[in-house]
Image (cartoon, rainbow, N blue to C red; front, side, top):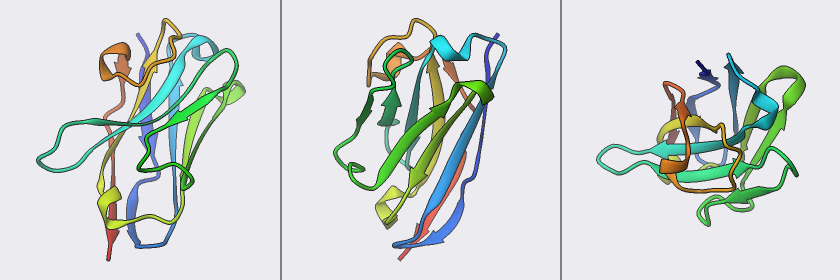
Length: 124
């Protein structure tokens, strides 16, 4: 069973930065496509970023392009999300997710394992 544990959330002022970390255990991390999703109060969970296991290619939601960067360190079973120039609308619980089939997908349904989430709050 794969376990994902996120950390790095917190309270930050608009324009600030945070770096989220997700550590995986219990599986072959290097073969998983990893993604970050977020869910704001009263809203559906939405895609933020993903990184493909094979090529390392990345994909981002339009709302975060140019501000967020996803990366991975397979030696440490870790995926990171560097978030710069944060805006109040980025406030949400951020979830790390793993697709053990290694697909390139932004769909929630493609991801098999999920972390418990970490809260990010951006004040104006």
